[in-house]
Image (tube, rainbow, N blue to C red):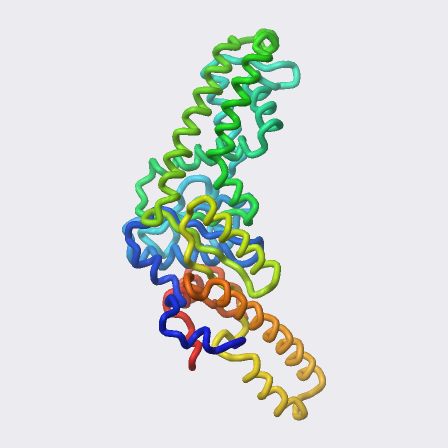
Length: 364
């Protein structure tokens, strides 16, 4: 490896996620990172291990490009779906857009608001104005619907398989977004109350006071839920964030950005999973010595294949070394090997998950 001393120091945190499994107070575990680094696999493996120690575990995908169904090789929907082979593990895939549409329809029913010739209601018009003025308000409201639903379910711990980093960081800023939304709505009420009244009449029902009251009420409910959730998220006894990356420059850079943002929002993070590592137990220099002493006996194609593999191994070791430089003293850094097969299906997930808890011995 880049520098063996990183792994020999007994004072370094244990290179596994055993600390998460053993912390039985945890209720919310977020798994996040750059796109394509193995967040879903890590989430599923973590859920698999938690199911050994907790009564009821739920894995929730908040990524619009859902992959839980593919990982478990079974259909997973918007409601908690029991995972085959487990009695206490379920998963669900959330559609934020559908949640927001459902919420709008319930508000329209409550206010009696009709629709114009284009099919738009007063609620939709106000929501469009808010969304255009405050990017992220629609996500904030749909996230609050998700959290309200999850909180009503009886699960000991929830693992969130999150969207790529940018979406995740917006999630953390929702309390701020909602404060802006209240200010914007009150501004709209003061400046455009007459227009809203005319629009309500055109839409065929729902007085402006009803429309505004419905939206203000829903925003207030959303703010209360997210503020409560935000308080829980900032409690390290209840919430932690697992950062996932691969040993490449952009991914390590994104992880550093994520760690800094999590710190800014007061969210605990002390675990990093590095996926797709070539021969984690071997050092590039050691492999290089083997290659140099044997390459003359290899066919040309085999030499080229080994040469490319060695180049990749040296690059990975460099970034793994940087990762330990940055986080080795304070974080549990777990190196997960690149396999010669996909990790799909319950049995393969169970096998791979063991490496999160009992990592490869780097000193062998």
